[in-house]
Image (cartoon, rainbow, N blue to C red):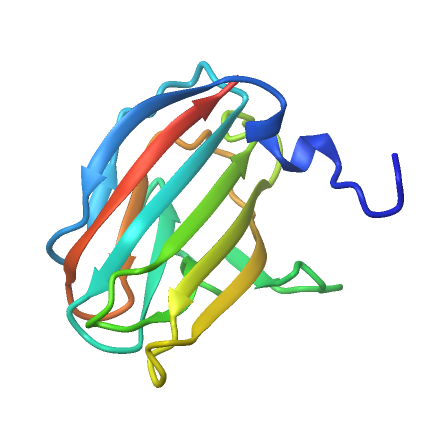
Amino acid sequence: MGLFQTPQALVPASISGMTLLSTTTLSGASVTLSSIPQTYNNLQLVIRDYLPATDTTSLIMRPNNDTGTNYVYSLTGAGLNQTFTDTFFSINGSADNAVTQNLSVVNLLDYTNTVTFKIVLITSVAINTTTNTNVNYQNFMGISNQTAAISSIVLAPNSGNFTSGTALLYGVK
């Protein structure tokens, strides 16, 4: 593997086919993607045009609606000796409530394992909340210390409601 190549395991969409499992409109205080089949290797969640009702609102995710302090995440995944103190994964830093040009891709790796951590890789682009002609982009790595297989995902703004947006959930073989 070359110095700058991405390990194949970290890019599940590139190693085999994807199957669209659900398309969900973002509305209200939260949405739940439920009854996730346990027959895939990984999941990929694509969130398009997330629009919160309140400006500078972040999009958050809770696998299995786990609200405990069981998450840790950081930009680019650079963290040693981290403590699980968060109650969700942050999908994007913040979004403008007037412009829907946002895109986030979340890869949930080995989501059916019941032995160890759950790892998520998140890439997000959102319109800057101060200057609507600029964008914010971020790469996060996150870990949940829960061992239950992921069978549902809750998406919510960190405050207020969704105005619009679409969540596409794919199973990856």
